[in-house]
Image 1 (cartoon, helix red, strand yellow):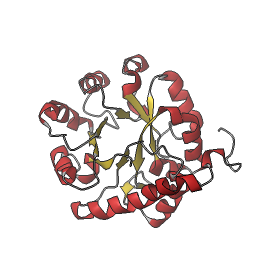
Image 2 (cartoon, helix red, strand yellow):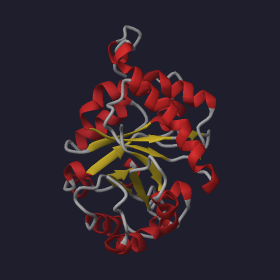
Image 3 (spheres, helix red, strand yellow):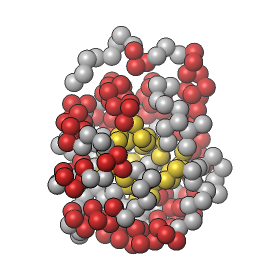
Length: 250
């Protein structure tokens, strides 16, 4: 089974310690994404890392700030460079203003596809241009972002087909019209089920649904139904990535 867990920011905005505590003893959770989506949260989280109890998690990643507001790019980069080298650093393209800096992270830099509020990283062609700039970077496939941009999920399938060798992590949630991360609804579950069995079974899955503590178990159940069932039945399904219905690269 793939490693699975939550982003700390989804469970406790701005409170990474609570975001960790809420999932540390939950059965089935063995992955976590430490989140500093707002740049002012970054210094305290990076400083706290040596003392954090992460023993329950087989997989750990780190989400970089989504915008630069209170810190400059160099400061953010230097803080992120202090992270353990085995952790992927999930980054939105808009903070990467000085490419040579970020290229130095090599495969630690993990680029995420974006929602429709952004100006790049939304489609296969836009991602292709980004990976030309960052040839060693890996890829975080955000299924909610992909569905918001293209509800047919054809774009997500193209991303998976072209970037599969770079795939390091999955993000899962429903995503609203303004980019808000929501609990997984019925329509999103159906959309994700269309390609779930084509995803590498070992790829870690991070849930970004913004939910209260009492919803952790139900949300975990909802996600596992989609992805665990797909894994079980993968051998019986046609290979989606080779399906004739797929459009050409865009």
